[in-house]
Image 1 (tube, rainbow, N blue to C red):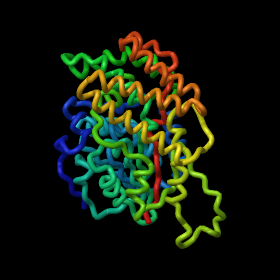
Image 2: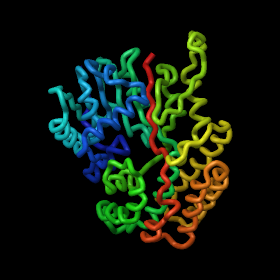
Image 3: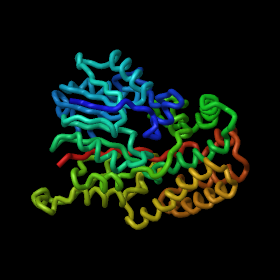
Image 4: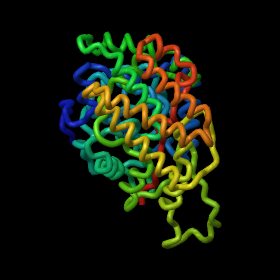
Length: 386
């Protein structure tokens, strides 16, 4: 039996913001449904999930947003599909979308609930939790709660984010804060910022969200505390789960399969090493770099963590000295990465130039080196419940 407490929109940063503004800024353009399904299929392949692993199986999805991704999962023919969300606007949109696009006559069980309040004795073959864990007050605890609904041998899919992959957005949020009119409504602010950032977003060929939703979710959402990296996820779930797949796919294991048994299995240790050796690849989605020393990437993370924290402070204070320190740190990162990614370093330098000249919507829209720079903002991780 499923039990839950109706969500009040106060326990989660996402629900607090979405509920206050009565929004669900995660809609996608699925007018070409086949293309949307092919994208989801590509993601699932990276994660080791082929259609036969879902057909006839049980699925629970936490935080389905407006249901766009659920349309694909539903089309694979699970025997049972439970969707848990605490955002009334998102639930309404999910119901409508599944009624319009879901295939096969599956009856979906939509549960209005905070994720942390969801309870059931049932266990599922597949547990999905996308774009939820970062910025939560207790992301490790929430990740363990979600993973606990997988059957032994079942698969859990979560998303992770770190300050390296988020660095371009951290700096865009600095620019957005400088452009804000405190007297304007959230809707007016979002519309204004679309004008500044639309030239950046038009460089993303795979962009499937509206520009306004992106602004609401990436520029105006009040991130608090820490992000939730792949390293954080492995540490949180190490006792009960083994890493299975990832997207982008960074996992490489050259061990002979006959040697992988008993204490030598070490799936999570291998994955963690792969994360640290490839963390710099999160910095710029346009580039693919060879692995580098773990220590060097740990230094990069420290600097990006500092920028993330400074951005949050600047958003609350608009202090000129904080803005100046962000420029200093961005230039330090530029020097660090120039040896392996000159285009990323050039983008970072242009950020400092625009800040120095005075941040205006026209200047932001016209950023030629910074504009096309985006990180691999969100990474997917699949794990097998032990």
